[in-house]
Length: 109
Image (cartoon, rainbow, N blue to C red; front, top):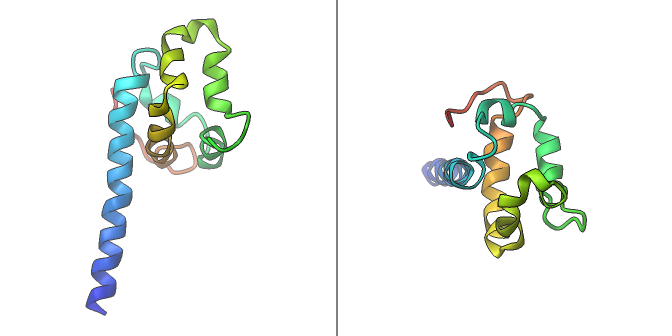
């Protein structure tokens, strides 16, 4: 019983670390253009964020949206880089945690 409790606690802390990493990545990579983190993350549902961050989908909607927009030109190197592939899970977790259907607000601002 005690082992199960510690295992669940470990899993929860790992999940939270991913959200924390997502917040740091958002601050570093996204905040320069998307100034209001609260508005951005709560603008979509958790399911929509999951779809946007689907890096295995050939369309990769989030990256394509940025790569097809001239106003987002400063972000093009990031989306062409392997670091986006690595960061996307953490960013997705962060955006989903504060999505419109989760009822939480982040503290990016």
